[in-house]
Length: 297
Image 1 (cartoon, one colour):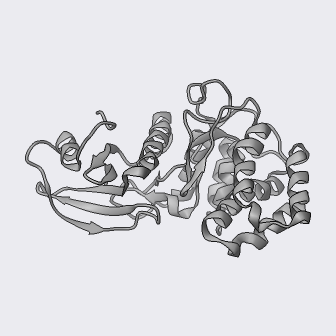
Image 2 (cartoon, one colour):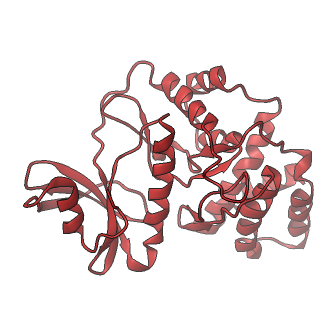
Image 3 (cartoon, helix red, strand yellow):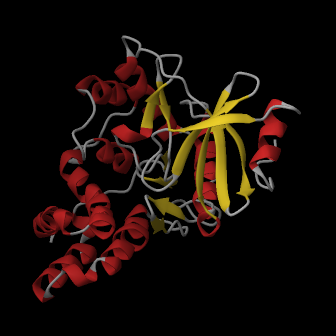
């Protein structure tokens, strides 16, 4: 199905549901802070999930579609089915399957860990034209543009495409001594980070708000900030805001054992997300950023 050229929401609904099916009512549902998320109740008794944003922000949905399709193509973990994307009057939209949650299966966390490890082992050769790390195009981490320019090494990618753009955005928060510490950290990333044995497709923003329990009782991924990088960066993000169950991490390592030193590297990977939160939400994240910088500079 073509999801790139719909010039109205009605046209997208017709393409996926058939002629004569139309919206009878809408209701607001949780869908993040960036977009207006709605449940569309249709005349045939079904319902769909739609996100809306301004026309100027339609690239949010282009990037989300590309990330969801990349994850879906691995066949390792479920994502909501994409039904349409386009413009509707003065707004852009993304139309998705409405995922009806069920009770988690007893082995939910174990299967989630296994599935994420399998995602990280999937082939990425077609996803980064001209390099080993990056993605087919730039996308977003929250509302912040995320650079995915191809790089040959992970350290170069993480420095140039992850830390440095966020540091430039946050420059006004730092004094001269802190800027020197930050530069020291950037100059000596090779003291801490390691190259992966293989590049991995990452969800990119994997915290508890970005997975669902699907109708099969298993984890489904939503709202990716996808790119090809080091699997450790994805796993690190899961631990930033409270972490997942211990059985998730144990199951992950049954498929993909972590190399020595991961727990220390985890804090450095999460500096990227702390910087992004500082840039998006303000000074409440500054102390966490500075503690991490001081530790690794």
